[in-house]
Length: 399
Image (tube, rainbow, N blue to C red; front, top):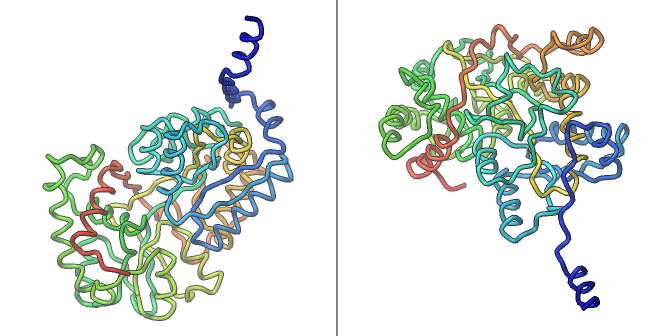
């Protein structure tokens, strides 16, 4: 019997180790040393990839954490991987340690209990985050509740070459009328590309009498009525697009070369500083500028989240915390690097840290915070999913 008891003990499932406490930062950094963090993040931009590589060099230098950038074309692929691991019972040391995420992907992971946390608001650098002035505690109307931490702010801007299009436009109706007078000179990425879907949402936010309806989920009962103005608008717009709407740029980054080559006068970006960065890198002519609409434009934060089954949660928290540091935030805002908006509250910083931001020259095409105007809230994630699918049925073209 004694031998059977010993055998049973040997064959019993080994209980999973308790997750590290995010509030015990000394313990987090001690456990993080030597860990490798596989960060699944969009890999479609050379400048972004270089920034992530710099982050990796800094967390290795300060914390002994190795950061591996796993380049994604679609964040949903990472969500599917974590879900598959959970269904297979792979609850420890999963393939993904951190994901650049927001919107519907975050909502799906949170709903399916695929995330580690809450952790974000216990990180040391959370003390510098602007929780009152920026949308860092909700993600497309979904409360984050500490299950993801912000690292960049974005807002829709329209990018135009003033050499050929000197005027800015105040509304989506004005944009439509401009395309009618200037056919072929505007386009947007093909949905379901994130920026292309954002353009569709921006149209809807601007033309609806009360866009607050979009803060509630899309349902079979409300969807057709709410989106009818969007399809009526696009029916008029599409023939006036670049290549008559029979082809679309694949991504947002694919539109800048079209402006540089003189094929487009107007495009859209979700980074207020991206045009200045492109000018600095000789990717856009110096005559390019940006504008927002009179009612404002959609804005949101980029977040990182840690899957529930990461084997390097401590290392991932170290990376997430460093991304919110004044050093990393100032570098990301530099238009020569990324030109991303900061998530930090300048009043919460020391004089030395604030000087990092004061020293930045945001660039000739970057609007000031006052010029960016009102930030329109992202619709509930369910709208983006249904609108993108509907757009493909109505206007989608093969690549």
